[in-house]
Length: 221
Image: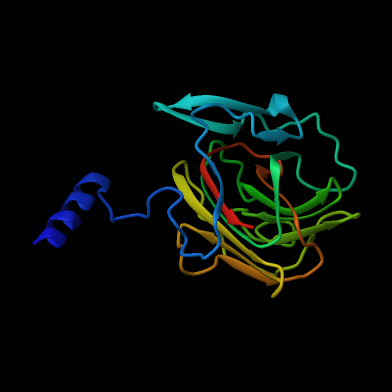
């Protein structure tokens, strides 16, 4: 009876089906090392272009997001313009979860990006969650003192709309595995194996689109 009541409550509330709580435990043995809901500000983040990011309230909830497509940040090699990195955390192996909402429909390359094992401005990985995949969109990328290059040949579209979506990234440097999940937290949206970069910084952003981010958690060492 309790199960039926709980299910009915979820259906009535969401009008769809029960979703994992924002930043829900991703079933990892790694300890939680970072948690951010932006309710107390965004001081823990370093952005490549501070004027492109805004800490604001949306529907009674604080978020951190990109407020314009253009950026004054000049990349040394072809790579994303909008990057916000956690200031005081580096990790090799980790699990990252967060919620993201695209705030402008820019067509086939509508995206958000996840940055990890970030060494410096020209050496890092990032996931480009682009709407329509091609060699420069919707792929796991590497930037290694040269313009970004895809290390996947993904053909899965990222189903963007104006709603909030859940993202999870799992990195294991010993195995070299990279797994990115979008809404479905059981089946990877994309995956790759690469051991070029180890311990580094972690961040969020976009190539040149607009997004809001919230409920960010990192499990790692």
